[in-house]
Length: 167
Image 1 (cartoon, helix red, strand yellow):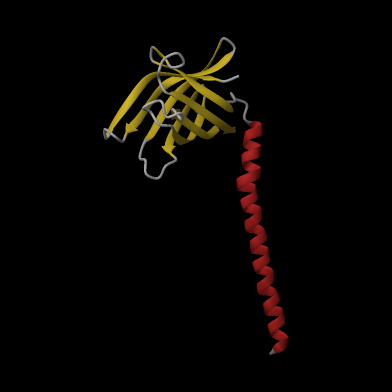
Image 2: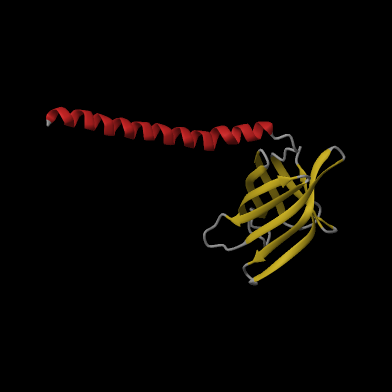
């Protein structure tokens, strides 16, 4: 009987180790190797970096009292992620600083993004589609946003939103 216990235990242990190695390699390929490869073969525009909202329609956001809005993007292949912030952190404005997680996708010369608030007690969300173009040797995004205003319990859309990449 003792002669059978050791080979059975070794068989069970070796199969568990093999399964763990297989799962580890699968995770590594899925979460590291394939995204790295996808990022390296991607030949489209790169949106990495800091972006500042410059216009909403005809309103010049940089010279008006409009709250500052910044978009910080990281890109892996055709996918973007990052942080969107708008408002004022000085307490001087009636618009407090709000932060949103950003996820998006680039296709042709357009980027679509969704934004979710980072606060658990805030149901604000937004989505946008932007055309990517180059003006005066500077990348810009121009498009429309749709967002939820939780204070008024309504959905709004904004046309003519422009972001310029910070240099």
